[in-house]
Length: 285
Image 1 (cartoon, rainbow, N blue to C red):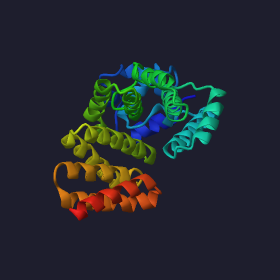
Image 2 (cartoon, helix red, strand yellow; image 1 turned 180 degrees about the vertical axis):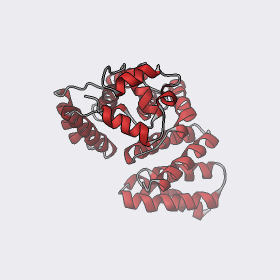
Image 3 (tube, rainbow, N blue to C red; image 1 turned 120 degrees about the horizontal axis):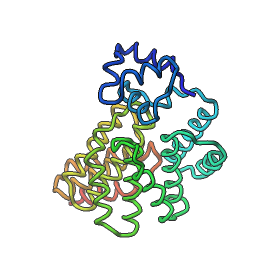
Image 4 (tube, one colour; image 1 turned 90 degrees about the horizontal axis):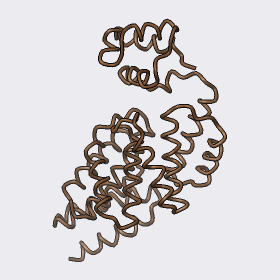
């Protein structure tokens, strides 16, 4: 069920007239019929109207089951960031028994299915299927965070298969858009950091240090702005490796020392050990 009253209040609070809101989307009559509860527009039109108001369709949904879907998806997504596969499995099992009626929820669900297939089941074919189903969705915008997460997932599958050209294709698509993502909540900030870290690491390994540093520095900026320390050790560790490759010894040591500080905080033993080994090598020379 759509909360028409809430939609209208948001439009008026933002001082957006009906004529301004519908320009290039639909007729004023369509909006007028919607706000007077005579006829609900198509999902595509409703989604565009909401986007112009800076909200999502889910913000004006009043349905207890959909709320349960949203809450379950959110729990699963935070679990994915912690690599808590047991909770992801439980959430996905619960979602299988719920009616997922909205496009955004379907996209979130497919991303989580792809993530679980790739990271826990190691089933690359299934993961690729779910990620590509998101990319093929006609209604999704290319600056949607889940579109970029799907690109990132496809890139990881291709890299695991040692298909470096396809991997680069996906990361190049990410690099063109990722800095344009609007970050309005903690979950989007964390997802953005994940994508930037993976992409920056890929370009660093491919010796494209300019692109790698650009993405990683932007990631550091996002983390600082939203007070997120997750992934910071990976970001700084790669920046340190890039600095070594470019012959910037002093900068490299600073990045690696900072990486170790975040690694202690995030309990990342791998970066803690590897960064120390590089620091020792640099200080010995």
